[in-house]
Length: 81
Image (cartoon, helix red, strand yellow):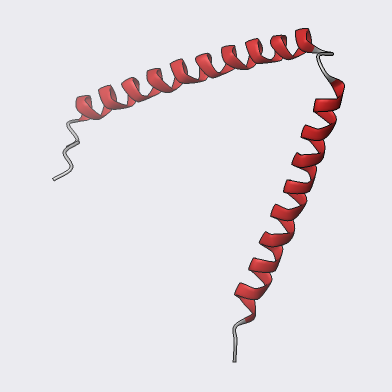
């Protein structure tokens, strides 16, 4: 007898990806029809997202340096062997 879990999960996955692809194609089609309208707004959003990404990377770098400093101060072993 076949297990029902893979059938349900694969069906759900196909439905979710199919719906996502439909809306992605629809969004790109409608965006192509708009043309160049809203170019300034798009540039502002890209600039803001770039700033957010830069701040995130700097915070990630600071957190990792703080973590490695704390680990060394506590004398923990960081080797992979």
